[in-house]
Image (cartoon, rainbow, N blue to C red; front, side, top):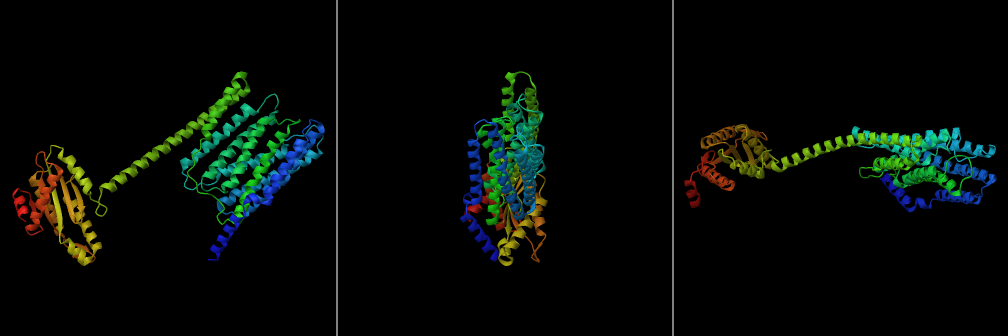
Length: 519
């Protein structure tokens, strides 16, 4: 009881403390605003201003990197299972970001003029690339409950499609061969591909219902990938003076990615159920959007003639088409399996709708449907109505459960007494019916005798031997006769059998109508 009270108290405390009022988050935003002010103040294109813009860019990232690493390790300590593994990868990766950015900040202050850039050096780029790839893989590999092998394959095909799409976008729109070195070109392609894939992975993970973070924490981290993509287009990464807006766009991912773990830390500290939100099954159009964007990139580069840039887009588009075709093949198999399951479900529903739930025989509805179809055929049709004698006494003396056992035993005996193709049904209570296909009067009488013979053998119910007697009425269809009339005549014959002493059968004749009217 104490645990429940504590959990409830923690939840109330969290509800009373919105993360929007968290002083650390407010300080991170204020820190970013201060950086933006400095970028603007240093806008005039002079070597000194360019130097201090770059130094500001790297120096102001360090506190945000520290917040990101601290919050990630805090959440790691509070998480369990697969969620704990995800946060271990994230915390390790962002610690690498902090190390790489620290080294790059030192270099920005000690390097000689002319080597300043928002593009990190070899060490910083290595920390960033390895960490970002590790985070994306951790998001893609995070377990989703109930996912089949085919669904996992479809997910990885979607991820590969988005990865190639990001590279095509960067190659077609961001890379400018005359302005980029070979290293910058590869870095831009990789960053574009990984940034778009990280957005896809984050969205899929949020919608899975088993996400290692809440949606409010994941959204800023997802948006940071969007700013990273925008940063690829606003200016080349070469050394030189950049507009203040370019610095701000490239600085924003540092703020946004730091907000996510801090928000999740606050949720984990005050909410007893901090991870995952049950969502609908995700369906993403982003892989197909990659194909559309690749076509747009092809159209954009075609006016420039045949070039390496055009061939790169063509190859990327071809790879995307192959991946999407594979995805569609998987979807086709999924749809086929779904249709098979639907058919099986519909068949089971039909069976339940046409079957007596206790005995497993056909019910009244199915019996009348089968009889109606049989009367349309030229072959003869006969009907037997079977009414148990003394069934009420069994219910009264042994109970309703024993009565149900007796009905089940009678159904089993009736099935064994019928020919292949004949239909036994329970009309309700202790009344049964039998539809005899291709059957004239003598065969109907023989079937009635077999049923009575099988019922004569007693069955043991609740330790007591019970013999189920029955009265049976038989009637054969006359030309043009409907189902209702045929059943009514069999019913008249069955009551004649009861009047004759029960435990016997009677075949309908017209004289029974007179006796029934007198009675």
